[in-house]
Length: 296
Image (cartoon, rainbow, N blue to C red; front, side, top):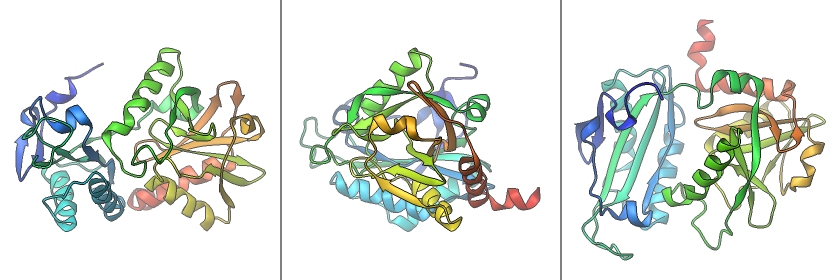
């Protein structure tokens, strides 16, 4: 991989009330967030110097922290302002932001009632999550072996670090097999999502997408549903069986990182990016960065 290691990036990270140099933003090896997964975070994008849906992302960050029993030592308004401040400080125009909250190392064990709640915010330039050539021709997905768990077993609506372990395992496996990403099923064997993005299908001019009952209802997903409905495109949220995939014409992923990205295939099922996918890609670009569209 070209360039320095990510932990040696130039710039500053806001960390517990002060800006520290990127390479010095460290935590103790016995931090509870590292050992027991008591960490929540957000993925946020800025376009043209403006942070997209900052309020929604900040609200979800706080909901996630509350779900894990963590009281954030800053207000929502403070966290929103800090995100604005850091992209200004770093001189970023189009960027990715990562607010993260975790339990520290004051106690070691499953119980961590006295551990400090730490907060950090990093921001950096962010190109397309997938290579441009992959995005244009559509991604290749394979079905993951791991499944999204029963919502009675995990806090599935929190954006919590520990819930991504099976995503990493799934993505690594399919990448080693030459695919771009994995499609995960839910605990009942229905189509759920990709490893870090929601999934949509189209047939006969209608969008179909899984009900987010055991995984995140992504902010980008919600945005795309709204954009589709503004266009008069019918959106059906329902249980989707994997054996239905061959009936769909188009498929795409949505997420803060992937934005709206076409899918060319899932296992042996092929899709062709068409009018709906193209329209929603354009509409999403206009929604997140209207200044860029106006300048064209």
